[in-house]
Length: 144
Image 1 (cartoon, rainbow, N blue to C red):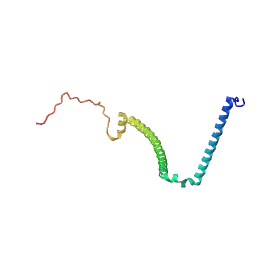
Image 2 (tube, rainbow, N blue to C red):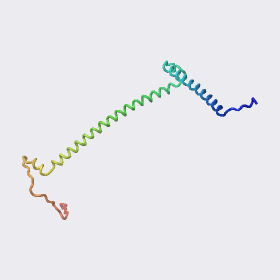
Image 3 (spheres, one colour):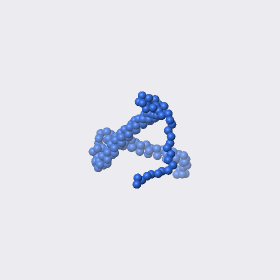
Image 4 (cartoon, rainbow, N blue to C red):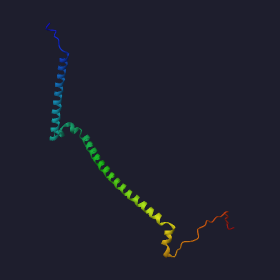
């Protein structure tokens, strides 16, 4: 009877989870050691002498070019937005000036104000109201 022993199912599950936790710890330690090693190689400049880096040098230059283009695009967008803001302010000022000039023009174009301005020049306001000239028939002589 010693060969057949009763083993609790919870105990088996606990042993399996313990094994998986230990395996995960090992992989995490390996990953952190790998990342530390990579960081040290970057700081030393050791990664620049690898064959893999040298083989991918055109791609690295392409990435550098893209970074320069990205930075330039950011500066361009910033200047465009600054110009847009200044143009909007200028447009607001010009709109207010337009409405001010329009109101002063409407105030000074009246018949009385024009007559007062022309007092010293000898031009006088007509007291007779204007009349329309109506022609009932259009007759043109051809001069023959």
